[in-house]
Length: 241
Image (tube, rainbow, N blue to C red; front, side):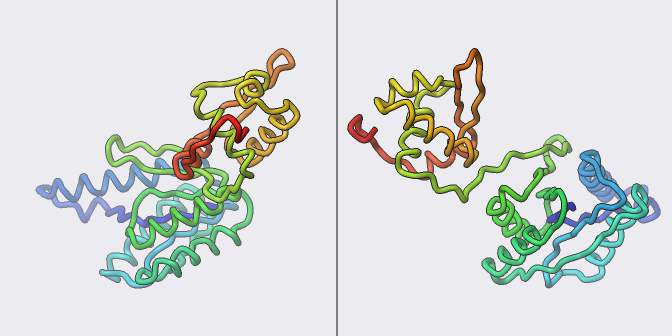
């Protein structure tokens, strides 16, 4: 299932006047955005949900936008299911919860496209996507700079590691590179069994990644781990470890 926080107008060629270069450029950009998302794979049994504000500034243009996106998708996959879900634009918390419910109840692999659209919907959808980190297969974003669609790695903002695991994560982060469990144990001045248990918990939370080489485990901090440390900055003394 793809949940898209945008609905772009792809204008027919007949709507583009010879002297209207701005409109032509706009049409080409919107097509690249939608087609780029499709490059990540879409099948006939998939469902695409277009998330739109409950109130549109131009109902006719909004209806045209939805119809154009549906037409593009169904030209590529005639059996694809396209639905529109309306999210209130005037209550941020309600909008976030509405987007959250869309993600929570989605079946199969969930792909979220944060490629534009009304900020009233895009920001709540982004927050909901981060809150459902474990539910999302991939998150896509469109670049206004080079017109490319890229897969984004969003941080998991829902994790709550223990105080001990937090301290161990701080040591890993301060090291600034991959570190082995023996070195981490020496730097932490804690028992190896304690460090191993904390690292396993951090890995499960997605705050570190680990690999084993020559029977030695090495760990590295992830984007989520870096953001967690920045957002929860604390000072520790050696006695804390």
